[in-house]
Image (cartoon, rainbow, N blue to C red; front, top):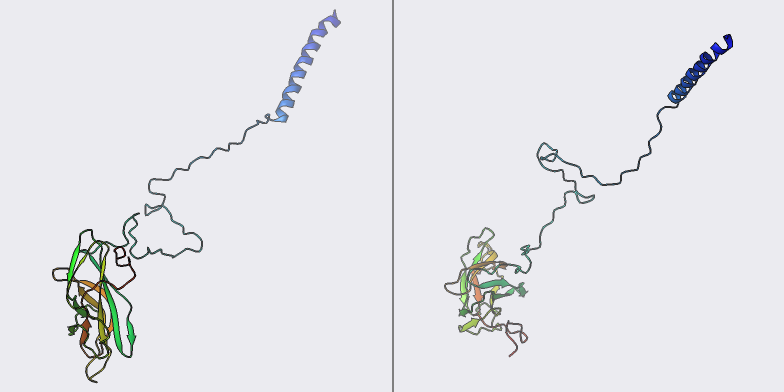
Length: 239
């Protein structure tokens, strides 16, 4: 029959039309969105072996406000824990000088020799002295044992005697001079340092010290003696 033959054709047409409609809808909607989870992991950057700079060094950026600031270690700091501030000089003695005590032109300075070694050190008599200028050249100065310059008679001098310093003990001597101009055409002797040899056979040490000798050319020194300090301050228990 005519009607029966048309049904299969109509069904096939509807099926094809339905498939075409679904494909068009899918094509118009685009791909389905993909849900992703954020990655919070930390990833290390990899620098070239030379740091990425022509010089082959890593860039260094100073902290704000510190550009051009240099840090200087404290004097004597060795950077090693437990080490002394300064190494013990050769010979086992460290020589230092106090500030100048001056009045009415008379000057006095206490020089201290401290035993910074483990072995005992003996001192006998007067230290050997040389007055140096700013370039380290010695002045022509007469060193006198004991007070001799005017007004220095009150400075005690024990005279030469032997002192044995054990580790940590000290001895002192006093330098005395007068800032006097005796000749107008004779230049002043303004020492910048004094070279101290604690005892014969011991190496000398240079101590910064301003010595305004005028043009007298004389420097007095007392003999080494134990410091007259409170008990226990000379490196030994109170006695």
